[in-house]
Structures are given as C-alpha cells and as structure tokens.
Image (cartoon, rainbow, N blue to C red; front, side, top):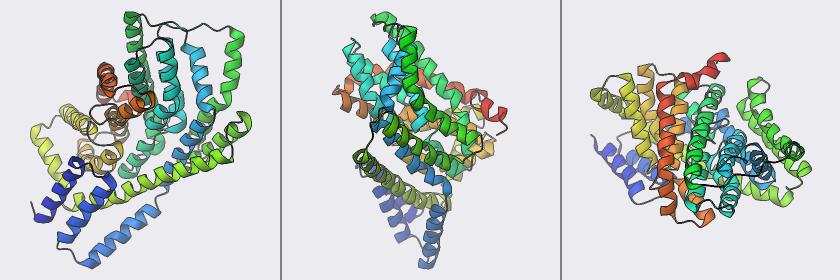
Length: 431
C-alpha cells in the first residue's frame, strides 16, 4: 500500500470517528491524497474538468431536487392529512388499526415523495400523535413509523435509486417498477407483525365508517392520490422521462395544495424553496466530493481488491450475496445512506457484474438494505427523527424497533434470493 492511499484511508476513517460532516471529510481526504500522489498538476486539471462536465451534463441528477421539492410541497399542504384520513377509512377498523393506517399511508405517500425522512417527518408526527392518543405504547408508535418509512425509497419514485442508476447505468424506469412488489411485501410483513402485537397487547380497534362518510373521505383524497398517477403514469406511458415527471408532479402538487386544499400560499412556497435549495446543496456537495473519492478508489483498483477478497472467502453466488448484504447492513448502522450509495456501491459493482447479477435486482436489494440501515441503531437517522418529533426516549424506540428490524431483514433476504419479486414487473413490461 502506497503512502497517498494509506493517508487517504486513514483520513477517510477519521471522518466517522471524529463525526466530521461527510462531504467536508471526503473533500479533505481527496485533497490529502492528491497532495501526496505523484500526479502532475495538468492531470489533476483534466480530471477536475471531467468531473465538472460529467456532473453538469448528467440529466438524471435534475430529478433529485425536483423530487425533494415535491416532498416538501406535499408536507406543507393538506396532502398528508388527506392521505392519513383515507388510509384510516380503508384499514383503521381492524384491531391495532392505527398501526395498519401508519403502514398503508406510508405506501401511498411513498408513491409521491421517494424519501423516507419526508415520510417520517411529515406523516410521522400526525401518525405518532394519533396512536398515542388512542393508547398505543410510545415506543411502538415511533418504531412502526420509522419502520414503515423505509418503504418510501423502495416503492417508486426513489431518490437513492436515481443515484444508483447514475452509478450503474441501470434503467430508472426498471428500478422504479422493480421496487413496487418489494415495497408492498414490506408493508404486508409489517402489517402481519402489527396484527400479532395488537392482539397480544389488546390495542384498540378503529371505528367502522358508514359508506357515505367513506365515499366523502375518498373524494377528498382523490386529488392527492392522483399525484401517483401523474408521476408514475407519466413515466411508464412514455409521455415524460423520470426527470420531467418530477417537474410535472411538483407542479401538480402545488396546484392541488393551493387551489383544491387551499393550504399553500406564497409564504409556504418561499419556505419550501429555501428548504429544497438547502437539501439540494448538501446532496450536490456530497455528489461532487464522492466523484473525487470514486476516482481515487478506481485508480487504486480498490474494487478489484475487494472482489478478490470476497472471492477468496467464497465463489458461491448465493454466499457472496449474503456477505454483501451483511456488509451493507453493517455499514448502515454507522454511515448515512448517501455516503453508502456514492462511495461503497461503486466498489462492489464490478463484482456484481462479474457474477452476472441483474443490476435492477441488485439496485432494489441494496436500496432496501440501506433503508433498513436508517432504522438501525446506533446512528439510524429515522430513529432520531421519530424520537425528536415525539419526545420519546431513544432507548424506548430502539427496544420496540429490534423485532421490526428482523421482519424487514426477512423481506430483504426474500427478495435477495427470489429475484422474481423484483424483476417480475420490469420483465412483464419489457424493461
């Protein structure tokens, strides 16, 4: 191992030990490497120019701020209220009904935003408050909110899948469609767990609504629900690209929030724009610095080294998928999703290609894997979000979260070893 690489790896490890902001830490690690590497300045100039050109010409990346903006608009208007009320009308009458409402609302909302954090912070506050008021345990209310929020980026649209598509070249449309069945599987698995817990703890049943009231709630929710049709229908009909669909759905979200639900004004728009710019700025800095890190990883042939190490452990395709899943689950316990996506996925992609694993299949598997990481102690971001918005002690949330993580991991390994769950829809539509 040469000195520049050693310094790079040590400084990269220090990012997480010292809790340095990831984007800044990756930039520092890259600077240390390039300062010590025996490359001429001209080569670095050419490399930097190639980075900037690649970023500026990557049309796919434009979808990210558009989906972020759409999620912010949905959370600002009454869209989340309509989704929650509609979900309650559909499944709320069962024992543990509000737990089921939590999951169904997350599935619906995931078809609009593509963000787990948007789900947890938007619908989450409403869901947790309602569950607490009806006698559900605080920890359980928070944990099921975090667990159901993992559906967000698995069910289309999905911001992590956009970045994965950029890195792997896999079709965004196929990735989105491939996430539909796994997203529903996660929802069904969580609802089975909720039914078991609700029966053992005697959680209350929801109120059965008369048909007239059910129709009224459905009518109120239809404009919000139709945003899923606008977004996914536009993509799969071929009318718009995923990036253009993000813009179209954002416009639709503004129109229904402002003119149908009358809960979105100029001040709300300004607030949403500021929040979107702030989030996009952070993501852009992460993407830019990750390009530099990926370049270093590439020229030092680290993917080849990792592939060699894993192949020495086993050459069995199923065992390698197990090892890769365990590796990403471990990374998710300590590192945020974007860092895993932009830095660590490129390291294993050559091995995935060598094994002949379908890139769409692997993309959906690794996306669910990373979402599980968001709910995994000690640094799962969703745990901190639900704990913060509900003033529930983190240890109480974690205690209830553990069995739900086991449920999520069972689904993860199911879609890992039965690729048809992921590929059945993309292949049916010729993708």
